[in-house]
Amino acid sequence: MLDRRPLEIFLAIAEERSFVRAADRLGIAQPVVSRQLQRLEGNLGARLFHRGSRSKVTLTRAGELFHDEARDALAGLLRAEQLGRNVARGATGPLRIGYVFSGAMTALLSDMVRGLRAAFPDLEIEPRLIETPAQLRELAEGRIDVAIVRPRPSWPRGAAVLARHHEPMLLGLGTTHPLARHDSIAIGDLVPECFLTPQFDVEDELAETVRRLLRKVGGRPRIRATGDFITAAALAAAGEGVILAPASLAHLVIDGLTFRPISGHAERLELAVVGRPELPAAQREAIIAALSASRTDCRV
Image 1 (tube, rainbow, N blue to C red):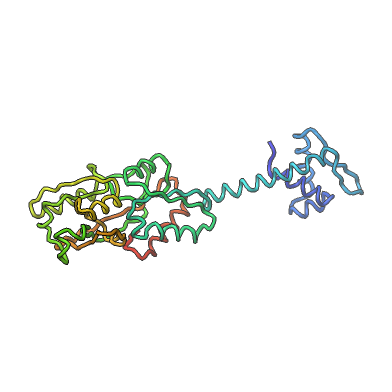
Image 2: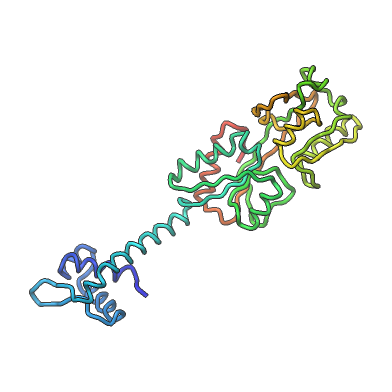
């Protein structure tokens, strides 16, 4: 198997036509050049140079044939070494980012991408919209590197929370809904409403927040899972129910949909930015730095 150093020495001798000048060019002693060349010729089973005591060193026929291959092989080794270093420090990709819809609406995703691009101009960044349960599965399986998700009681083994974002909640409802006439909505008025949620499982923070909200007034919530926030918002605009939504969702313009604050409700929704264990330290640091400087309410 060919190593980088013998190839560098062979090419230096071929270009300089001198062992002495090749040694000076590479910054090593001439005996080292001679020994490395002899080892290379031994591995190949062929002499690569005609040697003379005073005359210039010239390539043999085997040396001429080997020259172009050696140059290409060295270039490939250098590229591979550089790629390895870039991968180790996170300068090359792909970096796969999963995010829930609110991750885009809050600017968490764009702030993160902006910070990564400033730190690693050549990094290939691949964001993908995925709901929280699927993101956690893909994070555990190594199919995404960073997740922007709703919080869960536990995370995949070895995963680390890089930042947490908090924002107020609003009630989303159709503009023709009777409650839309009010500047703010009383909790008691929400008891008969059907709440549309992105997903509905035992760990769904939003569904649990609806339950806590209505327990304050002795109500029992009706919850309907829709699969995602866009569907929930569209159904609310159509009069199919209401949504308890992060305030950032109010940036979404859907005809027939409006948002109101809920009186006496100060709870805030959380997003977590989670990295898999193998995330390069430099990428991890760039993400934390970007989110620390974010315009959003983000704590690292």
